[in-house]
Length: 273
Image (cartoon, rainbow, N blue to C red; front, side):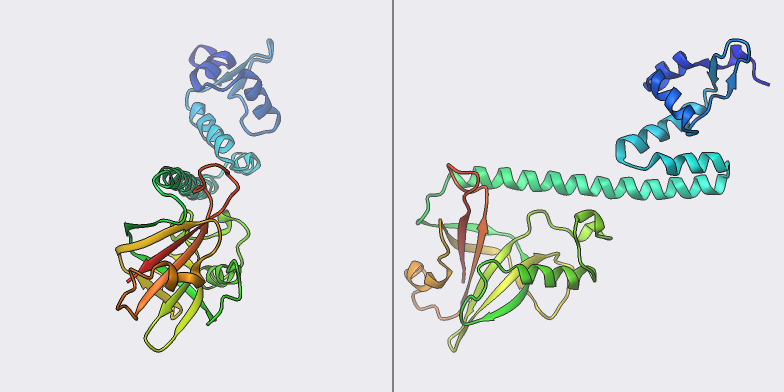
């Protein structure tokens, strides 16, 4: 039997936890959290201080999309093992959501960085810059580009990397393998004897596959254009390719680089010697 003097009224527990009185009544109706004691004469609800911990868990469920009915079933079962399993599952869910938020934040930061860099460059002009090491999953197209956007490479890469079709980032088991705004496009490898085009998609550097190639960090020449120029590489980089018979050219089609239109794609052609 509880002593009301040692309990918290519904208003007090609401003030303590930051949850509205209306929400507390809702949790009671849905059997998510019942008061520790209801005065039979007045109908006043009372809670223990320790119930504030359950309320914190409920708030986490609400804030981070964990179904309240799962928490309600655990509380109704009143089984400590079930509660332990629920907490472990919730931790995993929250950690994945944290990774997803970081991926989203990284993607927005990359978009902003692209916008800031693009202000320095004019289309049709050749520039030079440093680039980071990249690993690309590739699919050979032959001596002509058969696909304007190599979506088949992306789909094949996803299947190779995750072993299944992915409809949404939340369906991926290991979010550490995701790259925000990964490079996707075409590349061409030139040697003295031949050249071949490939579609490619950037993958984590830990990904190992026979179709992967590594682009080491270094310096590249590049140019922005409003249409694809990869097949005109030899003419565009004529000065840079003097006495060079082995090189690679990479082209990506990207948003966020136009100086006027948000919807306009810009093709970025990179020469790697």
